[in-house]
Length: 219
Image 1: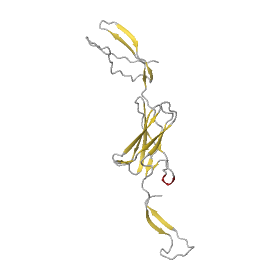
Image 2: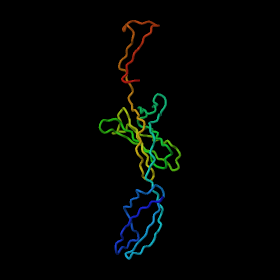
Image 3: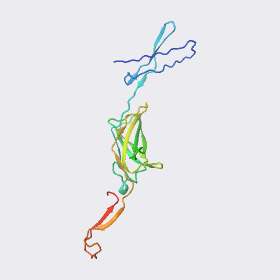
Image 4: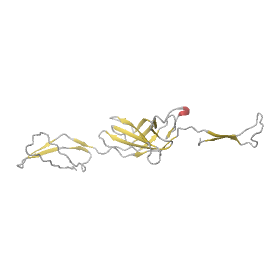
């Protein structure tokens, strides 16, 4: 079924312009896809000329929304960060995987990380460009700095959200991903003790001492 919208513009007497711009055409009811553009001109005497078929247009008002997003694991050895964790080693260049149900077309994936600051949470953003012909359903946004001067996200829960903007300027709905945790401070030892009955006893080789360490946070 074809749908059409009609709009008229009046040309004033004495006009000398060869190009007339018709504005305010409401294309809401037209389906996405190819749109045929035609034009006619009716003079003051009621004579109509046309219809002239113009350059075909494309209507596209929907951008593909992501399905999920989460902070990826990274690094190696003692400084490696687990999935959905931002540690001291990764705080300056966080990576987030954004997943779609189907491979997104050319456009831009945007990721926002927001902390739990009371009132107005602090947030940082990062983007990744999706090239034409992309076939991947997961796009990784890298290099998000959560420790930039003047905008340092506090330790604690981090909200992860993502949107996609296509090359026609359509922005998808925001998708809230898996919550991450930022923890960039290593635990400290608060108390050193042991569970033996005689706390200040003399011990000899072969004796067993149960040492107890109390840390500033769960380890």
